[in-house]
Image (tube, rainbow, N blue to C red; front, side, top):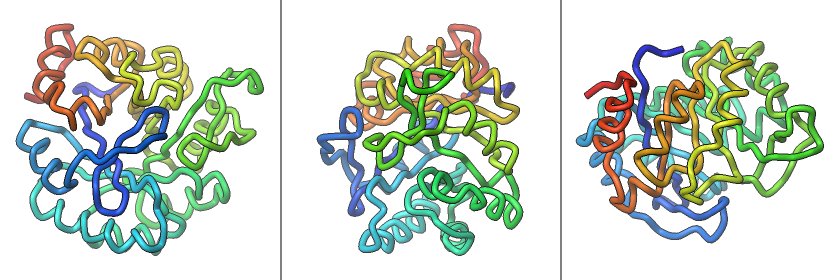
Length: 254
């Protein structure tokens, strides 16, 4: 769908620190979010995504401060998700430097939130974040989860994505809970199915472990590829990924 494929580092933030686990469990400290954001900006990241993985009231102030300090140092689009329940939350995040917001659990609980945010700020501000698991309980074989993948809903992932787009979501961030943190590669089937039903950009997330894993996700239909631990650990850089994509005939910004 997009002419240029975006490479997006994801910063999962808890209590003001970047954390990472496997299948959203056993979280470990990976560093300071502002320092990592500045590093990825210098490496050529196209965007940054911040996800407050605990999103408690106590940590919300920390997230606003982290967003503000990051926006002062990096000059690429910044998406912030976690704990967004109202247009007031969105307005405050935009006021401190966020360019887009990601919604997940709150939109599942109250789908009208998608309409409200899109109506107030435009679809370009709204990213629907989907934490998806394989499940025999749905027609597509994929179910939407909440609470970091720990709670399964009754929503078919493809049907929910369709509804969210109709309500005004401007982008889909599709994270495979099964692949998350495993470094075994993106869920190519899931990415392809989302591409088939989506009229908006699709971001593939979950499972990156080698530079060779990114191109198949793009060929399956991803407009952007997102990863976390492989960048935080220094296993690869943004430029490593872009060079691998370019070598596979995929256009990127260098």
